[in-house]
Length: 112
Image (tube, rainbow, N blue to C red; front, side, top):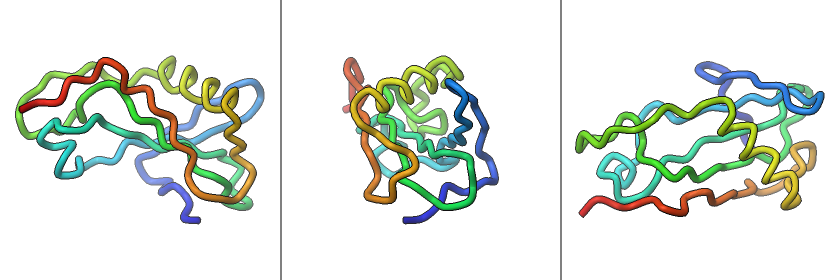
């Protein structure tokens, strides 16, 4: 399991646990064309041992999309809500394993 790159990541504390989250700077091809929604990664920020990364699939386009679709910024409140929802669904950031995917893309409209 690869750890989340610290450069460009932001820290957030939720219920006594520190996390680090990051949006990929460059969109994937499908995200650049707004065919798929933006994703961002979250992991526990303890740093001693990488655990399971949380991948949150947002309901909006990537901010660096190539077709000019306007987006709202991802706010810390969105990250907190996603982390809490993932924890309720069984994500354990301390356990090693495959990334845990949380799909919050309901309402995303792909561009033609």
